[in-house]
Length: 250
Image (tube, rainbow, N blue to C red; front, side):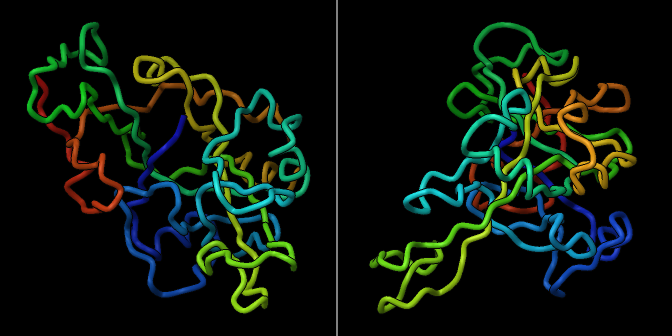
């Protein structure tokens, strides 16, 4: 799965990489992007600009705005009711320059170290790793997005969820999910799934709908690296540059 990721470049570099403008001047590098947060994506509806959508897709037909889906399996993304319509009509690019995976530290080998469970930085027997390209390049993960609107008869929904105040609709909730696939040789030592990393030449083909599931294959491991990081990343409220620094393991 993909449950946390990073985007550590500045706004100018991000705009240049995707030839898209940021809609606000408040963009800052991020070191621990987490579900439930509003994060920058590029949608097929407005491919020349970044929009902030909440990570955790809510299908348009859902009864309420709870239980957002952070990942969609590539193998069934065109069949599952939660994703089928978004796959056909609402695709997005999710910019990143790395993502985190957690590995059990009790027993077994992985990524070239023994990772003893006595390591004081281990949290609950798991060690976080950051997966990135060796040159720290920015890439696009394949995503889907949705727009959910509360039923006009609903009451009592909170405004964060796009609910109602005094029976008046406050607006739709726009959310996204990241498509995952089988892991490549590097990520397989960490997890049984990985985010779909699109080739730059395929980004617009994915976004426009010109291409489909044939793009949702594992990215080759060549040029990629994975290294252990501090368990401080476990807390989604922590977002600081030190999170991407490599740490020693026992």
